[in-house]
Image (cartoon, rainbow, N blue to C red):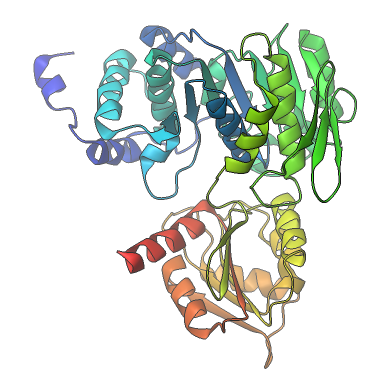
Length: 434
């Protein structure tokens, strides 16, 4: 690369992201050949255990619990998660602190120099950059969250010591297939021969089990190799060789969090010789864990709930969690979605939980328009009368501001769907407070 081309490289993180967002012809370009080639040029090697987490839902919660517990145990922890809500820096954390702009700029330059003529998507480029950054940091453990699927996701160029599949359900059908068996095979692609492979889905697809057995992974299944039980005050974990009793419930709300927490403890059991973790550190980590946008109930009145439920499986969980909240006179929903989602499937789970729908456009070409969302609501039987309404808005911010203006202090506002929906409302709240 010539000195003039190097001089022309962006010098700030926003400038780099602007370039990467428009450079590649496809937003998603499945396959690992290009990423593997550049990874080899970058010589990315991890000198510590790597935990990889995939799944239709529950990935973020699982990564956050792993991070919180391992930090409580005094380990230096690197985390790659996605997508971000407000700032790109959220995607890479070291000891819970987002990585600074200047570190991203430095490592982006390394990837740019290493890739030569190889074209990379935004996700592939930034994944390689963050993996390079974490590999060079003085860390004791690295946690990597898979983006889409598993087998062909850019993160899968890394070999993990422990791989977790949290759940398998229908999502991203254009890329992963339209059955749980097809999707289970894709997610099982993160498993490695001779390494621990964990699945916390209570009904794992047979394709996932068969692939793990075929490659010789050490498969650990929920209900067979690890489990939990508990009462209203505490819960207990039982693994192959380790029990943990009298545990606090995770501070993350939601019906599925013990499944996620069980997978976390199964992973820590597998790594107990390299990364020993005490009982009190597990308890404290579970209490301290924090994750925005996953059944996040904000303080104040009216009650505001933020949840990135964007597929039917997640919407069913959200609906169950809403039922457990207690009485609210009316519920307003701020809802935006990508067009490739099962929108009617999502709405069907939420239909009886919402009185007033505030549907919104999102700032991406592949987003569903508010008109499309209104049609989907009608198709699933949502009625409009004196007690129920459907209204369209140009943005999540506009929809949220309308809901806030109409909701009484005993009402509830549920912001859900795409990450962009929740991010838009987070941005509106941050701007209102600044």
